Length: 593
Ligand SMILES: Cc1ncc(C[n+]2csc(CCOP(=O)(O)OP(=O)(O)O)c2C)c(N)n1
Ligand SMILES: [Mg+2]
Image 1 (cartoon, rainbow, N blue to C red):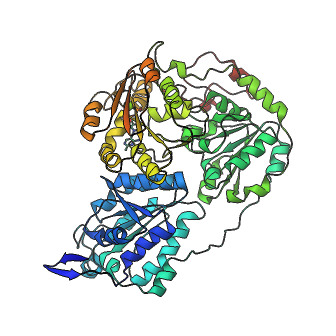
Image 2 (image 1 turned 90 degrees about the vertical axis):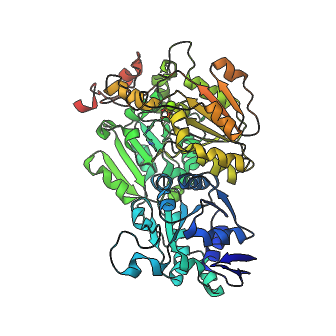
């Protein structure tokens, strides 16, 4: 093999094993084996090493943001580590939104950025200039606050020592993304076989001491216990164990959106997901509890509302989490008890406890007549976005992967998707518009035998529309369902409630192209769907396609908790006797507590 370097053809038969080769082997042996990338000068050696490695592969994305989002989806759908390789400067900074998805949802992912040669760097100059080498950017410092670990590698020996370390950091404790910035001279440097072996070893970590949780005692002392299963329990692999325990002892339970796909949602004692966009039944249950046990959830403000004091205010809330900082949030809440524990070890706490059959029956009775609320999203007879999700779902292949985006379209899916064996996910914490398209690509690439469906809004699609080319290039049979309300629906609904319906920058000023022409340009089959009937009739092809579901521009998210309201009192404010059946005397508004 030859390559043209500095005006002369040089023999590059690769008798030398380099830092770049080591990274390629690390990707094969310790990660998912495929790097998602956009190339560039500073990462070219790593890309070349991946290309030459017979066991590695790479996928060219059109934007680094998308590569990072796709890498995030790899762990979520396979349990293997997703990897990106990008160049310095703009290539590296473009990763940020995708890395943040992994950070906020505790997903391991590894990002390799190329960096200028050390002898060209700012450090070599010895003065604090903004930039010395071309595109030199201190990415490690920039991403410090959204990674578990980020560092520019300073020597070959450091690269060797740091690879097993980043693997362990990403996957132990509260998991998350890591970034390594690798100067070109280290990519080119020779690595000995002894160093290679050391770099590819698996480090075993000592576990931190943990608090034991007496779940059996807590539940047996309670009158109306409710268990909340969060994504932390799901990522720890124990969501089903907790669910089975709840089912056996008839303890009603709810899940966060991050965890809902990890439980059997058709089970008898499951009440759904609570929160601002949660189900009325789940919200009633949480507000009626005298003991709420939260297993691996950070109870963010989409769960507890902007005023967390209105959330289960009369219950004892016992929170189990691996992260001390999360537990520190509850200092101002006298009714919270906190336990620092790795939920991977919760099995020991799931021993026989008191059955709560009567409490479960009374909760079922109180919430039985409750309207779901979906029918209020649009006027009667109009194309309802909730029906659209439900009809589309009936056409999905069993065991499929379903990715959702951000905004109203996400809520419509998560609120109404019927229990089945599909795997649902989204980037719940960061929730960037445009996540679901590259995430679907990452999922499909690593799960070639599963069908992947990508729900996305018209606005979200425009944030990563260039990745349609990646779908085409790799022949990925992804079905893209645009929930097209011709605007930023979730923002409009907020503006209706707060700004007398002024739709600045969400309806007024926001524009969109013809998705039909876009589909045509990328050579992707396109289907326009304007009515329930048309959707009913639609046959989804096996190959990739775009289904443009055109909804009323004022389609609402229903139910939704607005402003100064309790989660048990959601818009639309339809007659609902269940509020009177709550076992506590709630004031009308949380601010009156
Ligand atoms: C990258 C990014 N920019 C801005 C936002 C703020 N935001 C949240 S939802 C939304 C509108 C989304 O519009 P669309 O994708 O059409 O979804 P819809 O709510 O209409 O279903 C905006 C602007 C965001 N979440 N992510
Ligand atoms: Mg929209």
